[in-house]
Amino acid sequence: MNSTEEGAKSGGQAPAAEQGGERAALLGFLEHLRGNKGFEGERNLIRVVPRGLFVDERGVASVVERYQAWFHAGSREGVQKPIEKCHLWLFEGHEPERLYLVEGKSVLAGFLIPIPLKNPQQFGLPYYLGSLLSTADYIHPADPQLQGLRGAELRRGAKGLEIVVSRRGGTVTISEQVLRSFFQLASESGFLKRRYPGIERSLPVCLKALVAMARRAREIPRSYPLLVPFQTKASKSATARMAGKFLFIEDRGNAFRILELHGRGLSTLLRHELASAPREKLGSFRLTPKHRDLMGYYDVRGRRSSVHSRAFSEFCELIRLAREPREKMSGWFSAADCFERFSSTYQLAQPIERHKISSVLARFGVNGEQFRIHGGWIFVLSKEGTVMRTIAKHIRLAGHRRVATR
Image 1 (cartoon, rainbow, N blue to C red):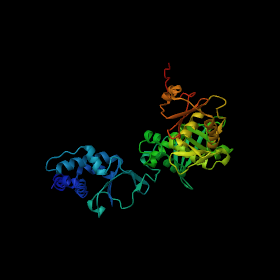
Image 2 (cartoon, rainbow, N blue to C red):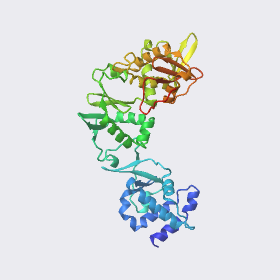
Image 3 (cartoon, rainbow, N blue to C red):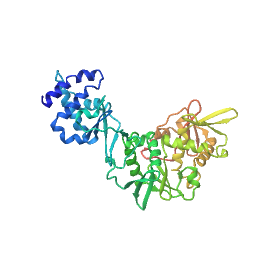
């Protein structure tokens, strides 16, 4: 029996098996691969493992195409399954988990086709009886994706993997611990997930993004207005670098913390910093650290006025751009420093009617029920009196257009 007939015979059950959600029909596909002489050159890209068939990422397209042909040959109705559906069914999803298969000093990176197996050796194909490692929580220096990574050297240090990044003026060393903290940050960063697809599921992708950002990060002098953690501001040896909205905190050539000064990353930092701030910095304000969105509230004569985390985050971002000497922060500042400015500004603010600031609201794309203003700052409140947004009429952000006024 030739390989085509063998595939047709064993593949005759494939359509019914797939409709029933069973994977057992793929045992016939493994038999087909063993007897297919045209597949000899690609055998080194697959391994039969206890959980199924591991396929190196370089061989995925070929294996999917061979499965499509095998399925068609075994279908009594001559069904031609689209290549996209073949890939989806084989790997059980559009974005299968990327895995390592480590054999000595060599490593294959690829994906698993789940198949119920009892004896991986029985098919006469290359097999592997060890465990597969997920790239979601492990990174191998020999990963093909990392070979030729520009401006970076991977090495094993006393505490695990170290990444030495070359940049203008020298190098910076990033530990595996910092890489993993950045990996956690990436899982919550909309910007990083859009810029580097799959970053929240893959340490190698996360490493590539981190190296690219570390190379272009520029040092920020202490005289420049920048929000930094209190410990960084107090340290005499710490330096700060920025790459877009990301802050790299370094000391003596080592990056020991990376923060996103935008969105949820900024809100998380502000909450953490204010929780350890001196009581006098907060005044009458009370934090609500367990609440997801509300940062806290003022309690004046039994009347509460809440502040949404976004309102304070926006104030912290906008005040960096302030040019008015009375509003401008002088050099690096902490969350507590910024909150003192926010609190005093808000408590001096007076109610203002919507129509008097409609052009500014339109420029920022903001709605609200109540509004208060002091100087160039406008606080937008909900119907219940919660401070939801902060905007600055004297600051024009990139992309803002002038709105014609009558």
